[in-house]
Length: 279
Length: 181
Ligand code: SF4
Image (cartoon, rainbow over all chains, first blue to last red; front, side, top):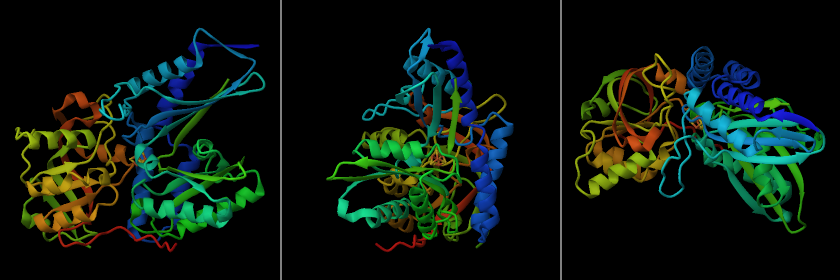
């Protein structure tokens, strides 16, 4: 059994959240620089230059990269030989999140679905926890913006539609999203599983750094093909036209029922803010 | 593509010359309102109550800013997706609102309202909230504080960088996706 104090988790998670919302990770920053170099039109170049300047500014001040600091989404691998001392996993993540959103000048964006009354402290976080063998506790965080989340879609395709159907659904989803989700986007795709698992796979895929392909060469080839097809749409940075509509596409695949072919597209904006801590 | 420096409030003479693709640097007073604030504004109009700001010539910025860190007038403050305000925008343009600022596509109804009432829809760079906050010199909550980030704020802006996305002549700037089913 490995014992980890709730206090240690709280502090690490709090700091991780504040950093994620202000310090753009290197893979995303490098992708901005590359897009800036490759774009030809003045407007696309200008948007990329602004995004680079924005990232530099957030890094050197206390300003968040984007005012929408998101729903607080966690993916946790909870080793079965781990014991948290002094609190439950859910409580410690929620408390750390509340402190981070307060101390880090982050926006509180959660509200009642119908009355639209703000919960006031960004609670509740959205937590996906999985029990895994061993004594490791891995906590991944994503600040998930609403504008890109709104353009996400799920479809229950017919098995006969196969790859062509999947490809068309993904590309059509991005064509319909157009300028709305703050392109250049990162696109998470979940193929298979069940009605609920496909979107979770799509979201989980977004944690993989830009440029890193799926370990399965067949899935990696799908990612490359989808990225090229999406960039052929010509939507470009902020929808003003250009070569870079998406920075990357991440696919995760899972076996599904013989009757089904679930596909989910989780759209992530250029402000792709993820971070992890491991105990 | 032309560049204009405009000051608020906007008049027909300011709006009519603008064409999709033009760059505008805006200086003066603008008002923030997003989903929940629009709902409140519509209720106020239905009940014939006084509105928190003068609509004539007004510019509405679709934004819910982040809290201001010490020494800043406002926190990160970039645009939110405008399409969610499409159902409210024509009514506000009919009552004198001249422009809105946001990101993303507008409905045909909004584009028609811009033509009919000589209005303009500006795009600001989405996700560049830290950068855009630097052009906001003052911020004050003037209505619905209970809405938190969705409260209506009066902002003072200096050379706020905008692109004309939909003009008063029916044109739109966004690239048409090359998609054929
Ligand atoms: S879609 Fe992303 S970058 Fe754009 S406003 Fe929302 S959180 Fe910010």
